[in-house]
Image (tube, rainbow over all chains, first blue to last red; front, side, top):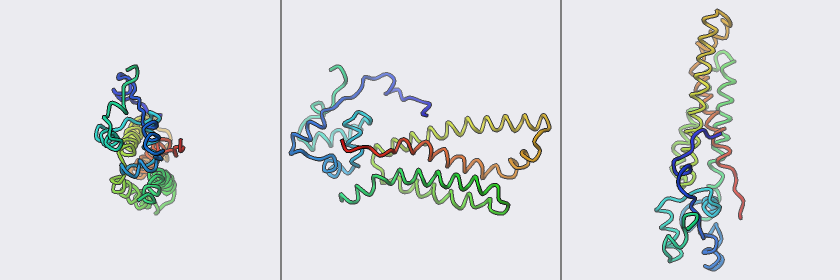
Length: 80
Length: 133
């Protein structure tokens, strides 16, 4: 049981993403292949896609660079 | 590189099991005279290995580890407060002398082992295995 919730979780709108779509648009890239290119675990890619984990700005930029798009094309706030 | 990544996926979860084992072992050794220091011999290497190895964790794993630390220390604080209150109450009522004596002799091993156990228990559900899709 986690006793505390972060300010981010409690107040800010949810972060959504099109990561899975971009993976499939880029030659059906697997989670593992993307994870290897970013030097993270496959579980981190899974967690980002499912909205279980919000990546840092640095990781978001690296993901966007991998697909040659801007960060906003992959990540957006709920309701936008 | 892929093999290294795949091997890394279970590392954090294995450490949580190691901490739980070290915590339980440490608590058990407190009941065997002469073996109390084994709690430190088992726990310190486990904790030190976690601290050094966690440097290879990626940012999600680091965040989960931070969350595990914070959850574990919150519960440790609550439990210590509860145990200390019980200790003072027993002392004031002059009850459970052997229990008080046991706490006086073994509090370092007990607190340290409890810390490891709570850290493992807090981290294990966080580092659960995630499916492929």
